[in-house]
Image 1 (cartoon, protein in one colour):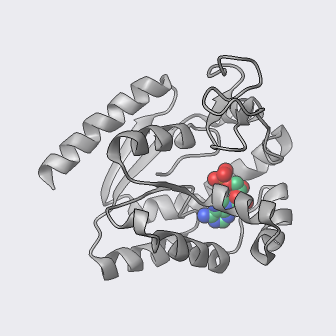
Image 2 (image 1 turned 120 degrees about the vertical axis):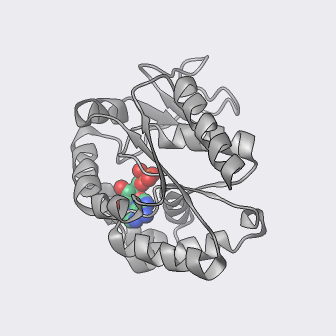
Length: 213
Ligand code: AMP
């Protein structure tokens, strides 16, 4: 699933896995977990992530291969935040060809002007990674996750300055990866709608694709 930072990919990924029964793999979450565990990979990624840049393709590709080798991925998986460069896209495509996988490609679109604003208002649960937004997707109780009741936190890179850098990286580096997958089972979704309405659009597309598969 492609989409700029703050477009709502994580929220949709969560909703899709809830109904499709496949895991959502966010390379950003995997990298943050490596950082929290203080692994060499986490240490290498930390400064790049703090500046809003992209972690090297080799590191991310290896991390992804290890993750999709887990048994919960045997019937499918949803990728959120990967591929982010043309090199990652080509690497992933090779994996798909080797394994006989035909991917569905979703692109969630939101205009740049509102993305930075959205990212700055984003909060997440450090335990279950559920995402909230202080403007349009508030938790039931201020500052607490609806599911785990943990105190919500703000990602270090969710500040306006870093969000702008992440957006630049998205257009410059992820744009070619999107183009690479554009002629596949590629679907665009209007990301300005309410999360439930976007999810309904996604479900309709999924049903149509799976019926014709
Ligand atoms: P995200 O949680 O998807 O917004 O990712 C947060 C940060 O993690 C990004 O700004 C990058 O620094 C890094 N990151 C996540 N996924 C990738 C990827 N596929 N390739 C390179 N860097 C990534």
